[in-house]
Image (tube, rainbow, N blue to C red; front, side, top):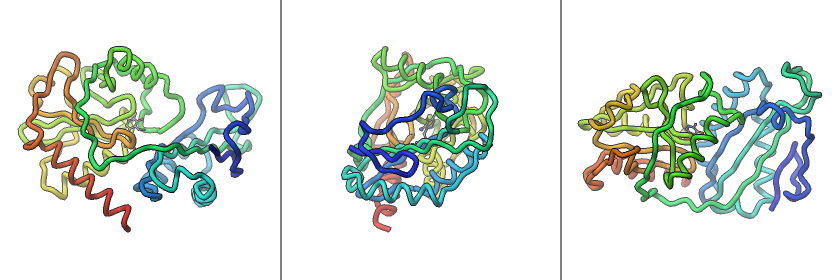
Length: 280
Ligand code: PMP
């Protein structure tokens, strides 16, 4: 297996970074997680737009054209990327003697790897989740490598045999540790607005587009944890998760008839969108 580090494609075991990399010392960096399906990077422009936005938010310069060239070079070397894979791209601020303040003159550390990942048309799972206080800072819209809040939340879920933590801030459901959360009530889809308390997922964006196209009523409004019992359906979206039904949040069970669900309609529409994108 190979990785790409600062533009060089090298065996994983030979990839080395400094102990003074600010990504290591401070979590001072940004990243993207992408899916490659049949050799095509899914919705890549949307990911590059978000990456650019994250870089700007951290006052880092961006050279997306150079990054894309490096990705092409890397993917030519990496066998797994010919089929279906998860592609991780990380840009940390770079190497400097430790000190909280950064200096704009240092060059970033750019790292990427791809691993084999089977991608199905539809994620058929029916997931158990738990609620967790959202302890993160107030710039969750930046896709950055400081992920401790998310790391703690996901681990808590796994330790209780759940797939994901549904995070709650001030009584409102924000999102999962690595997914966006959607709810359906009386045929209307609800999700937290794309403000600074959630990451605006690319899958989320596609679901919003699809609801508009399909004429499914849609409101960007957070659902209160106390309202959960009144919701008919719930689902998660994310690059890795794709779109997956939620079976349970804590003790509340969503007993949905899948065949008549809005979730299923969105899942099928999303599968079609993916297929069309890959063929393009
Ligand atoms: N929220 C958070 C906190 C995430 O980390 C992710 C995935 N990286 C998402 C939502 C989903 O985003 P996307 O659909 O772009 O993968």
